[in-house]
Image 1: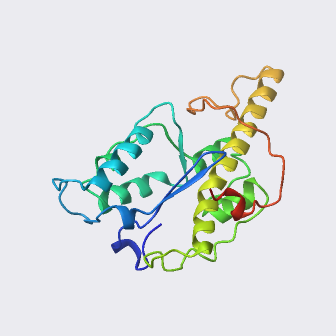
Image 2: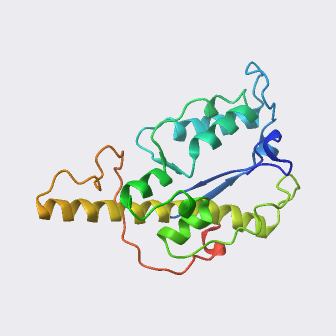
Length: 212
């Protein structure tokens, strides 16, 4: 999340989610922002703890990092906190928009998956409430509504990933059954290693259920 004010403001919040748990990291509270500044600044004790914890996740090839247009977000983090080495290197990063285009190349248009809400509508058949997106993310303390929104914003990416990968595997199984190895609807070239679960619900999850 960025502070109110647009692209000239540093990233205020970082959300991380697994299938079971969501972490909302208040970068504005824990780290000093030096947008576009020097990388030679010494870390505070709090920044050191954040830096070490996030670096282990971001550089680990075994941990898939799923996002929507993640390269833009990662560059924004590096620009906001240039003295934090954890935002300098990332491995195993996947853009869900690339996956959904591979899974449904005939059905997907750029407009149909523009933004997270539209992508959820296309893949999961429900839209998520984005009303808190333009709230003031620089104000502290964050409201419960903001925390709920931020948590759901990250958690829903795990559902998107599992649903899209299930579609890719179904496509590959159909291709194998038909004996046509030239079909482009396969997982070839996609760094997918985790088990995908088929979509079980078309009801949007409650934000409160993913906040820990």
